Image 1 (spheres, rainbow, N blue to C red):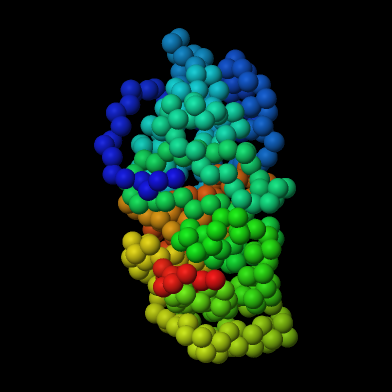
Image 2 (cartoon, one colour):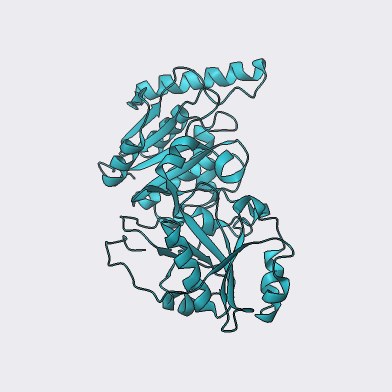
Length: 367
């Protein structure tokens, strides 16, 4: 995907919109009249309630029946809407969703490619997303996806790769950053690379900021790395019993020693959202530790990659998608998160510390 460039606001024909919550009994008769019976069936296969599912519909000429409808969802505390499917007059349904998103001041609309063809998507102003590089059997969701940006900004598309374990998010975000920077070829982003980098960075099983920063610098010596951690001492250990905390704390102290030996600075000042935006402007990448409580409903520390920005939102890659809630790689890829939401998500644990790893542009080509 080419960088998003400033463009004139597209003028679209005003359309009447009906927005209703989606539940198992939502307007079943209305949907059946629109055909494509297998589509509403897919809508009911998972519990999407955590992502505020709703129907955006276009009334027919008689005002009673619908001429078109789309199932729309989104992760909470984000700046996008996702079309799962559109039925009836597809273009009218999509136009209604775009108008609905503009009315909410959102940055983006995505469209899962279950039934949408590239031609229909393009005719409605959507650009194809790169298919995920995740190994077969690990990628959840449709084979194709599409995106339409509603705000200007500089956003280039990295490849998408979903973590293949519950604990390799830190390694995957680092690999995505280096692939996006051109340091790592796309065909080298695979499960072997994922597990190899995780093994060097892990604090068993998670990756804490200092260990991850040291592992990145060891893997790519020409890439400047700075660890941002505004707490002095071990992190991400509170949920372990004392005897489990002790040896993990020792490993974290060893990582700090290693950081000093190979020249990885540890900045103890709190990393601001303004600083993250400045790094993105310099074509650098920020691996940011967040809690999934806001987006997924469970408070688990998790690494995401900050790599783009639009007015009011940072664009991240999230290597995790929750298939049980209808969340797919289309949600997790090129995901705009409002600055205020990201600021809240990245205050980790009861102490509210912030951890990040900033990766600068390579000074030379690594072997």
